[in-house]
Amino acid sequence: MNKLTTCLIALSLLSFVHCNSVESGNSSSAKSRYGLKQACIEYKITGDMFSGTEKLYFDRYGMREAKYTHQKIEMMGITQENNTATFINFDDDGLIYTYDYKTKSGTKIANPLAEALQNKDAKDIGKRMMVEMGGKKIGTGKVLGKTCDIWEIPNMGKIWVWKWANLKTATNAMGMKMTIEATKISETFDKEKLERPQVEYRDMSEAMKGFKGMDLDALKKQYQKN
Image (cartoon, rainbow, N blue to C red):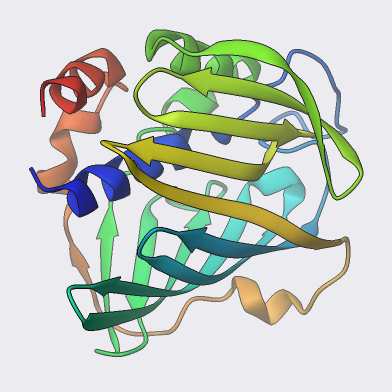
């Protein structure tokens, strides 16, 4: 597995573990992923070969979410540009929909968190997932003036968590660094940002069977082996 693929896998895994990963905080929603009812968080992407921006929009404490990513990857004089959006609605089917603005096509996959969020222990999911991957809370730090819990996952990276949302994610996979850090937080936004484009989404759930049941221990072993 090359370094680029390894780094992207690490970042993808870390993106799954933001769900209620702090030890305290309450919301008025019985089901919640964040400690804010709604917000838009803007991020800057930097790294050895990476650059770009990302915007996360969510409502109903994260039960409905959209993430827009514009990213450039430069390698061996070649630049690849990705412009995608990801949509999740846990109050609907809970699937993860990804739309590619370049190809104007979309895919959908089963969400490994959807089933777990239906049980009474949903508030502990994120913390348990990070612990299963060997993660430990190593302290606190500030991002945009917000005090965050810092979690470190061996061989993958660190996450700065505030009100259950990731404000900073830093990976260092096989010496390849990539950081996604919040640059702005707003609690108001255009709700149309949560609507996904109306196209036919190709079902990729079969390819994601390894995630079912959140078998992250197996994923961690596979990642470390590569």
